[in-house]
Image (cartoon, rainbow, N blue to C red; front, side, top):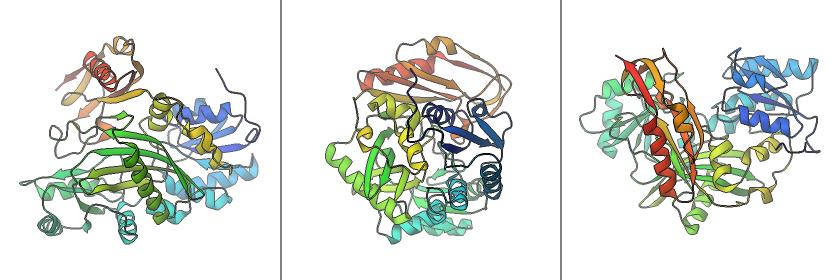
Length: 416
């Protein structure tokens, strides 16, 4: 059932940077609130365009082009009142548009600190935030020096990429030349860094920060069960909500996330985080000044707690304060997300039993990224995954079993 339009935002205009499938829920929510939505995307056939009131074909990573489009649109068509994204790693674009149009949003400095992993680590370390040991690397000799100082396993990754592209976990005997080449290829600026691989459970977080207050609405156990199978690539296989942390641990984590936000200058807005809980406590792997992808904010959190964080981020993009009362969990349900991994390299000849998997009672959402005729190159990053399933059940074990059942039901035929 559609919600009644919200008076305080009715007839406001929101620019959504990105119009892919994961931006559609955000566009729909804004429309239900009575907001006029403009979406931009590089793809003239972006699926989100069908849900927006208007659109522009602009590369979301083209900062100058996005600013130019927003200025012209606001001058010639409708005044833009807010700009945001979700599930897209374009905080610099969003911040630049906000700055140019004098709209609410992160500063450009904050957006850069949240986009450049090396700069982020330097700022966090200087502020006393616990992070893995790290260093920029330009050569194999640099990697060897880092490993001598910090040992195996080590992580080599691009400074400014996304979706785990080029991220590798190096163990003894690894080909360091290949690791450097692969990471550098995935960096738009050709920059690579190394960091220590920290042992311990990992967590995904989704938080709102405003006026010195933080509310972490989303907290998930990250699943790396295939760490060895897909080595050296670090591939996440979904996660589970609620996370396996007690109240004291959550409070400690919130305090760390708030310190992290302050250190990069994020004082108002959303922040996603990747955290590892070591023997010495939580450490920040990295954070992003935006809402998560992978349906975390739009589906996983609401299914687990009933909390709609996206609406609050839309409000903040339009200059309104978040409704903190609306961020309190309404219930607790167990949610599991897992991914499909096409077997091996080759051309996909067919994908069977998708409808059967969707019919499993616990399945709430199931999507397939690939199609017949696509060529797979093996699992080397998150975009290599073939699809996902989200299940909900009365216990964690039941949700996990249902997800596994759905994964095993769907069959990818590969011609090698």
